Amino acid sequence: MSQELLRESDTDSDYDRCVSCGKITQAKRAEHINYRVGYIEGAGQLCFDCTQQVEGIAQPLPTI
Image (cartoon, rainbow, N blue to C red; front, side):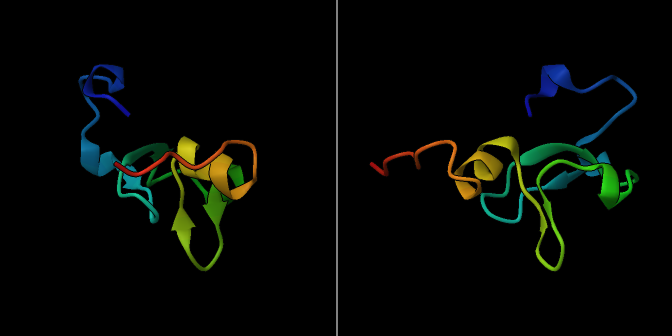
């Protein structure tokens, strides 16, 4: 999530990080896990890109 998408009152610490790649996700820490997209019980929150890869929707990005 880019900084410009965050509201002024929000900080990076208000949002979970992706357990796979470490990016800031769109899921607020205070949001219940039943209402989150990309949350894996026992593992944690995934960002949008990693969720797409896990679900087989997107192809993994090539490493350079």
